[in-house]
Image 1: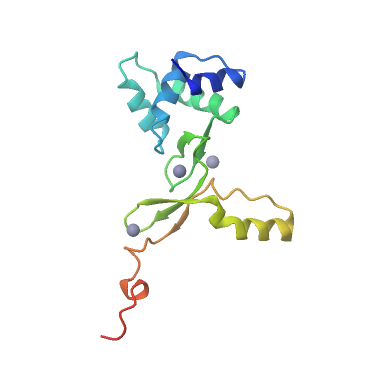
Image 2: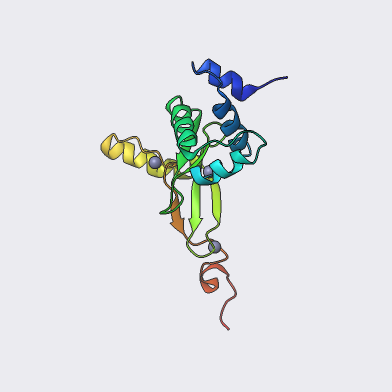
Length: 148
Ligand SMILES: [Zn+2]
Ligand SMILES: [Zn+2]
Ligand SMILES: [Zn+2]
């Protein structure tokens, strides 16, 4: 049986411990999860209970070797996800709280401008960009229906 995540953990020089295996299995679902949600979901996979401190330590060790990364979607706790297929911008709607994902290329202009002006290498994926989705924005601004 192939285990790409397990292979990746070993390739980065870590042992594939039981907590690491279980945390990665939950993160592989591809959602953004706070440590609290992760603790809850891991506890429901049929294995033994893992305390939040173990979940935090596990996330930290996986983040140190860049298998896991986190994004701040709002003022609450950071959300974690696999680093790999997960490189995108997060657009969070202030109205309905939905999270829209966009390719990082959408920020290329900003990143290039910042780099050219200051030499700073911006990472636009770490924090979400807040605003209003098309549905929550003022309909008069988003639809072109002429005068009423
Ligand atoms: Zn952070
Ligand atoms: Zn994301
Ligand atoms: Zn919205």
